[in-house]
Image 1 (tube, rainbow, N blue to C red):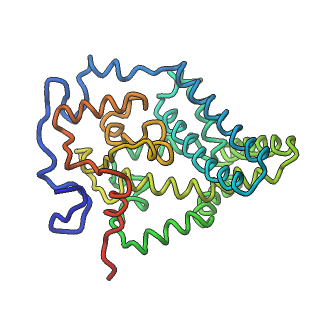
Image 2 (image 1 turned 135 degrees about the vertical axis):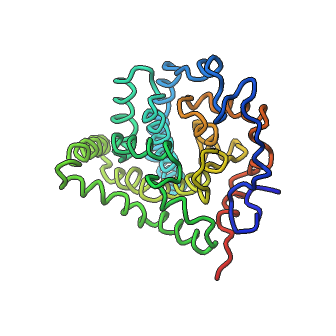
Image 3 (image 1 turned 180 degrees about the vertical axis):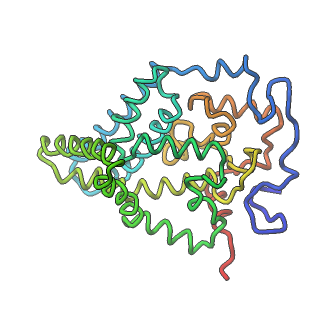
Length: 324
């Protein structure tokens, strides 16, 4: 039986026969976590490499925007627009790493970069995100799941998914996500964070203005965030948890998809596609998630029946509910 195939009801939750009870093993404990001595190596944070990764991302952003200005033709502007949507995905995935205290081993450096270099430029309130995201990991699909509305309805009809993605692509979801930030400026508790994010955006606008192109803040920063990034975010998020259930077995809360070079470029950079491994042990830095996943496969805890061959197959399963 393949993932998403009917199990007596319309569901994408793996059937019981594809969830072998093999734990503990000589290397994995209950819950599929590695033995403490093996886990220590995978938990090491590569500070220097991560600093280079953050710097390389910002060099990429400069190159994309600078290339569009230099080439100044319609194709270059369209490509830059799309690549900037991907850049927000990269910023916020690294921000996610910082939220887990996995970007730098020094807490102050980790949080400074997570806030001012990654999340605030991406219009994300780092502190609020961290709190909500930890609730997500504490009890996926539980009563305090912050993204329950995003994950729970699946499978949906193909028409429903098209409507959601259309709203994402045409600023509707972007405006919905921008409004809380603007509302935060009027809130006594939310104002400090909202002002930090707004201040960061003003610095970006000032940089575009200094280049003589202030309109590019709207066209190559805010607009991709409100459109391309929203599409990428939904497609990735539902591929992580769409239609899954509350369970202590992470194989019932989190999907796994076979990773390809194209998916890792466009949708799941920085190993975020190994999401089942991430939920098994949230203390493993992104560079080591493939190694943890191999451990899960070698132990027989992750079987081929659990793995979608590609993201298209999973999205088809998530949009497979018949129209009533």
